[in-house]
Length: 270
Image 1 (tube, one colour):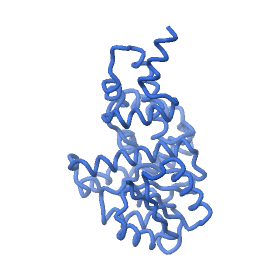
Image 2 (cartoon, helix red, strand yellow):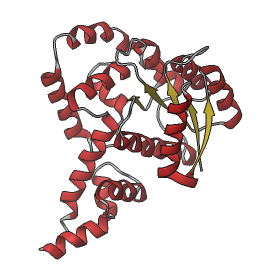
Image 3 (cartoon, one colour):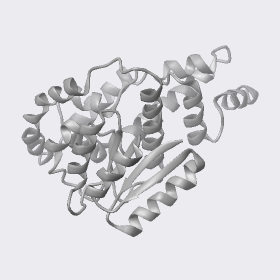
Image 4 (tube, helix red, strand yellow):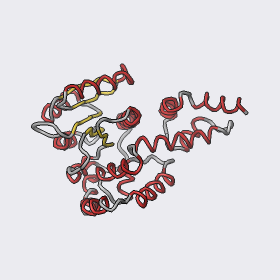
């Protein structure tokens, strides 16, 4: 069972999101709620949550301040920011937090599910294997290279950089979708802070990075599955999913079919 912290000072918003998550993930999740940042930190300490969904604008401690404290307590907690803000003025503070993604209210159902599925995958990965990458301290030190790009991004944003930046993003995804990449990897490659990259990506593609990457991978998987000799596991790995069960779950959500069912159907049509 995944332990999820949901923090939002708007009761209606919080309850609605909790219902959406419960409807889709049922007994596989356990949600603990908080009405402000201070309570969010207290709940996290008590429940040892694996995933934290934090609204930015909350009293006492805002979502970024709460995330900073949570990150100090755990470098493995998967953090998702949920916000109505569209200016990302908090980006410099949020850099070292290493959030999985930023969802703008009201978030689309597909974006919410894609981000939650990825959060669950990361939680499983952290639970089941030792961290083979950098330590949390090393990652925080890496963030220094992005701080100088924030003002540059603001200047670019005023000049409508969509075409040029979109092409660079698409090239990165095209060359790397078969690897285990994240939103942070894409932001780092393009020399943007995470939050600014999220905003720019949304402007370019009208969806968040996780959702778009998921669609690219599943579309490529469909092409590979046309080869009836290729195993589902091999196809899964070729499109960047190293857990074939997780791949099958995502594939079914987007297509309504398991990978094997999709391939059988395509071959029958022939």
